[in-house]
Length: 127
Image 1: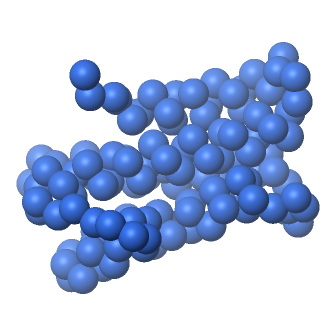
Image 2: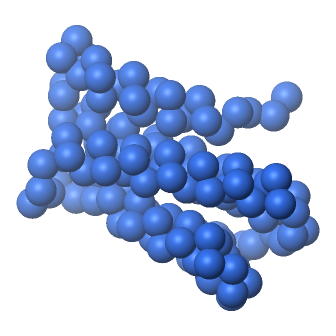
């Protein structure tokens, strides 16, 4: 059974909206940013595998963005840039002990970018 990657985005939103009822707000915000990114990334990579027949190994995150950029399509280039920014936030959330900006804002920003990325992929899918 194929996993619906949008469920990660739903989980991200649920965690951030319910952080007051969770054991640790900071952990919720960090997990929200991470899950939001992976929702967008996995949906994008699935699109590339299905539409373009491409599989990547190694630094898949970078290769997905590079593939999108190299198509010359404006929307795909925008998605690549949004993925890059969301990926940076995911790295901060998953690996940085101290994050200069608000982790709450970082999580919402990543959720917002992920929604835009998924919307862009949906637009590409109907072309």
